[in-house]
Length: 325
Ligand code: AMP
Ligand code: MN
Ligand code: MN
Image (cartoon, rainbow, N blue to C red):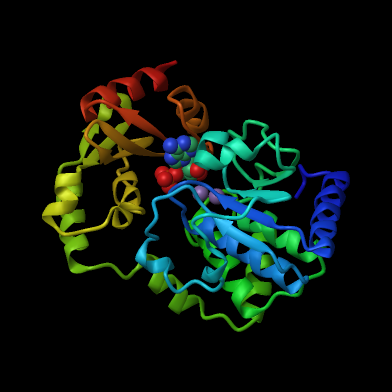
């Protein structure tokens, strides 16, 4: 937690304790299309605040309304609401830019806001930033906050934090997998959680139709050796043909990025007639946070994304230009 000062921690824990003591509504908001880190961090903090005595803590995200199936058994889902009551304090999680909060961004400036995040591309919104770009996951920051609030880990909180950590470290493979991350994982396992079951459920259990879809998208991958680039695209028609929900495409970038001839991998996932959610990965040499911000998105050095408009060919042209700048 090197980048977060003691003053910041004190301000955040103080604001939360005051709101809990007063019985004020506290709203937790994570980023649109939540992943395991966004949702896991949010539900962990929500459950910890309840243990601290909060009676009015609610959690939400800007959409889509249906959560990916692997998350439907997460502890703390009862914190989620579609139409939260007006909060006195807001906490945002794993969102690096206001745009990632959808309509909830309008509360910024009106409601004091604590920001829990770990993106290199964090834009500076909110009042009390608990943001550490050296943290492997927002869940790592959330675990520190929960500890500083004096709430002991239980199985439910630990499961949520664990899902955040394994999602964003690629199950302890990526560069920010520090000794601190492993010590946190050890603390989480001490609560008795079952890492094999969680991992299998969250990453390794998909309908057979998804397997066939992966085969098609991977077989269409294009290698551009001169650009050290590999990419593919999955359309809404592909999803429909195989009867699959969009969430099954999360993680498919890992099947593409292993191409040795490329330094950068991209997967374009169609979300509308001319709208694509773009995942990008680098081997570390290319700073994709910069590239993604240039294209209207954000992320980390080795993993970033943005929303692209037009055809896949047009979006790839923009990526090649941004990579060259
Ligand atoms: P993903 O490829 O969806 O796993 O996302 C990789 C990283 O890029 C995550 O840290 C995301 O927060 C970030 N990211 C993905 N899409 C966007 C977007 N449209 N805007 C901002 N950041 C994004
Ligand atoms: Mn995320
Ligand atoms: Mn994250």
